[in-house]
Image 1 (tube, rainbow, N blue to C red):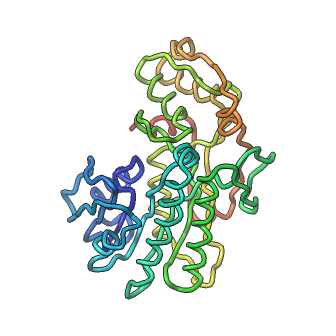
Image 2 (tube, rainbow, N blue to C red; image 1 turned 180 degrees about the vertical axis):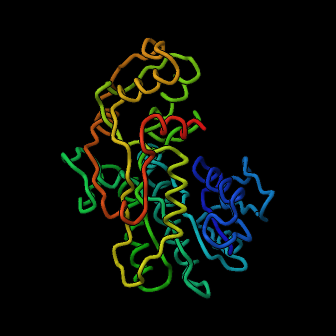
Length: 315
């Protein structure tokens, strides 16, 4: 089995590659080769148990994709993207990677000798703002940022190529994943990770949303578990609905801070100051309850509780 990860140098990509390198049978069959594709090769991925190779280059470059597909692939995790804030600031860059890159990948997979499994990392950003009082698996997307629109287009393409039998696709709508390392990634949701890093390391934190602002939370370990599950699960070829919402923890920033205080001591409460930013408050602090019984029945899971979320996010 050959596995390809696009965006392999990113936060989720590196953690997913590390998991597969440590557990070659995480997809059921043994992974015999790991192909890691990104604009920038390298990263902290252990490769002691299975062969791996980096392919450095642009996802829209046919030669780069041909190199990545050399010898065929059986499973693709498509994580490469220009994220929310960056895609909003630079429409052309977001369109090129998030739409043109996804289309180019699908076309390259179409040429494979047999349909490969494709796990497409979509986003809860397809819903936009303001959100209704409840989101469920039948809620209709209405993106209010280019990133959400571009990912929704990707979902439609994955479903159509799957309908035609060219790929075996499944799209999963990821929430903000914590705890990303502090870095200028262009992700407006970075503060959801930063609050965990700063408070766990004894520093003060200015929170840009109010303590009662509620978000959807998922740790990096839970995210990787769900991506692997998406690749392993059996999907009937006649099934046209190829998008899954993921179960999440629905918690306020105040509840997260309280859980941090339970783990790191009551001094945590003193080190947080709330200075709400209207844009971030509207985008990331007004998430309603999420109901996704179909995803739960299919085997997707959340972190369980806030203590587990924090432990897994900071592991």
